[in-house]
Each structure stands twice: as structure tokens, then as C-alpha cells.
Length: 378
Image 1 (spheres, helix red, strand yellow):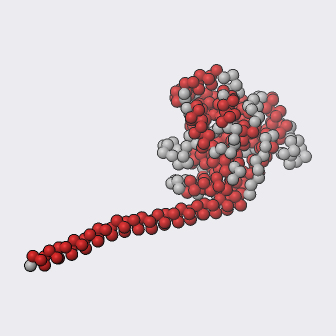
Image 2: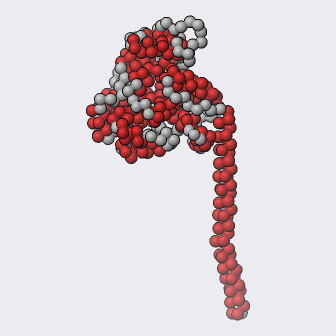
Image 3: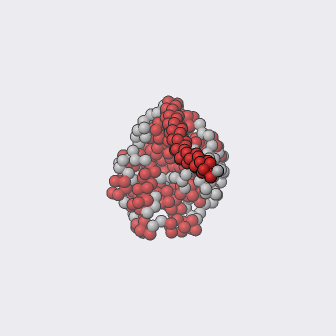
């Protein structure tokens, strides 16, 4: 099964031909985008596209029947990509034996499916994009989000872990479309990698009339990716537990993966992780995740893939220490909130007592007056 195993039996070529472009979904997403964006995207000569080989591999990763053999057989149809994978598998980062990799299948087995898919997408999507630091950060975020989404899914919906990885890896592809079409504006918008991702979403909405998740879903539909993957990209930045009927644990893992990656890539990871933990604890229906084990699994894989793609490796973190510090910040925050609530409760009680006191005083005066009047009449 593609979602996590490394079986090598062939599943048949029909898997790669099963998915066709969903014209109705593509039309709906086209109508949802501002007209000027669609016009500019369709005129753009550098709009990200995927060749048939990459599309077939993406579809394979969404299939429960596809195997590692199917992936290798598909990649072999692209000599340049095959040579790239074999070269990477033989690099110092992956050499674990004296035997060098000779075939595409051996390369995929040595790299692993996650790294292979990441290399395939980077080979086709990122080779023509800007090499600026903001684009490196976007690519780092995409990879780390994908690794985190897989680990979160392994804890809650292991059969969909591969789906979670792919969706999280592609959740920010809308930024590539914007960057290709409006390079100067996007470079200015994303120049500061420290700006929270949620703030970037708001800025995109202000500049372009929509955000990159809708654009990414449209681009995925244009490529002909499966509808489930398209919709997961579209709602990848939605609330962790939304009212969307089609919500699944896999989609929730993708939504949580981005903010978790943002925390890990931040200059103040403890604060961002504490904020995330607080939001998750306040959201009904969110499973209890073991973030320490997630981060322990993700960090070495992130380093390996970053070196493979020759991009900057994010600063190393100590998952246990990071989580302990974040939980301490969360505890301090909770204590402060409780202290404020207690102070507000006492102030409200005093206020209520102040309002009731005049009433009681007036009542006493009234009884005294009534008593005096009664005695005078008698």
C-alpha cells in the first residue's frame, strides 16, 4: 500500500490512468477566483505546470494499490529525472552501504517514497522559481508541513498518512502561481519570513481578492489531480475542526501541520507552539497528539531532504525541550488568565453589592417613614 508500505509487487498501470480532470470542479474554482487573476494566470508563460510523469506519480501516491515498483517504473520514463534520483541516492547523504545505486527502483527504495515525491515535485516546480530566501522558506515550510502531517496521520489515521503527506506538501502551491505571475509584488509580500502565515493570508486577500489556498486548489484542478486532494488543498488553512461535512482526520492533520511547521521554523518556536497547543486544547473534537514523537521523527527526515534538495537546513531543535518550554508558557498563560478571571469576578461581585446597597438603604428608610406615619395617625 502506497500510504506507508514499501511493497514491490506491481499493481497494474490502470492506477495511473484512473484519475481524469474534474471539469465541474475546475469550472467551480475558476468562477470562485477574481476574473483578473484567471486572465493573468492563463496568460502567464511561467505558470507552474506538471508533466505527465509527475502527475502519474502524484496519482500513484493517492492510490492504496500502487507500489514502489509502480513509482519506479513511472519515473523511468523520464531519463533526466531518473538520473537525478540515482545521483541523489548515491550522494554522501544516502550512502549506507558500499554498493552504489544502479537502477531507479534501487534509488526510490534508498530515498524512500516521501523524499522521492519531494524530489519529483521540486525537479518540476521549483527549478524555475526565484532562489530568494523567501522562496527557500516557503519550500522549507512545505516539506516540514508534509513530514509533520504524515506523523500526525500515523497517530490518528495511518492508512491515510501518504495522502496527508502529499496534500501538505502541495498546500502552498498557490504561492508559486502568484510568484510566477506577479514576481515583484509577491517578493515584496513575502520578503519577511518572520511574518505569521495567517497574516500573509490576510495580505493576499487584500492584494488579490483571495488567498493562495484557493489558487492552489484551482491549479491542482487544472493539472487534473484527484478531487479529494484538490479539496484538501483548498481548505488546508481552515480552522482545525470546521463545519465542513466532508471533514476527515487526514484533513485535520494537514491543517495542523502548517502552524506546527511555522512554530518549528520560527525564531521563537516556544511561543508559537504554545499558542498552537492552546488553540488545539480550546477546539472540540481535536485528538490528543503526541507532538514530541512527531517532532522527533520529523527533524532528521527534514535535514535529510533539505540536504538532498540542496536547500538550507532549518535550525535544529530539541523536541523535548521545545515542548516542555511551550507547555510551561501555556501553563503560565493559563494561570494569568485564571488570575484575571478571579479579579474580574471579585470586581463584579463588589459592583453588584454596590448596586444592591442603595436599594437596601432606601428600603430601611421607607419602613421607618411608614412606621412614623402610622404612629402619627394613631
